[in-house]
Length: 190
Image (cartoon, rainbow, N blue to C red):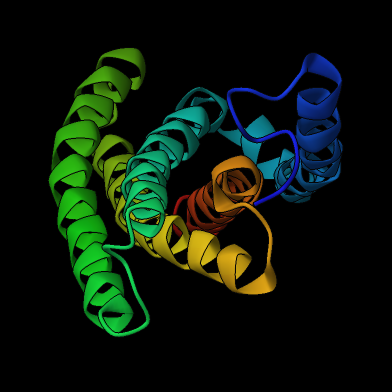
């Protein structure tokens, strides 16, 4: 456990412990911006992508943080060990995939209806909903895996997963979410 991660630590110790991870986050957040910039032409052609892409990343990020929170708590209470890690990783992959499919249907349907009322084009609306649904499914699967694998990897590397994991987990869901959604949209819709 790093200094500055306990409740009894002072302000300076806590800032020192957390600031380095926030500074790393500044760099990792640039990856998401880079991914978006790769698809600026697609976004310019279909502005609805700019409206919908934060939904993919945000839901993925929240799903990953749910998994991450359970993983960190389980590591701290010693309920998650090397002996049961493979089973828990598999479970979180399945949970991520199932939640991805369920949210794909829900969010895809809402996006289809919303875009149809904006554009009047049912074919394009259904295509956009399918792309959004596929991206949602893939990103929630990635979120489940990142939420469990990253804290386990950080613990193995000697870092405090409670302080450090969110930086990497949110980067995964942002980068995967933006890349898959915008990439599929560029391939399928444009």
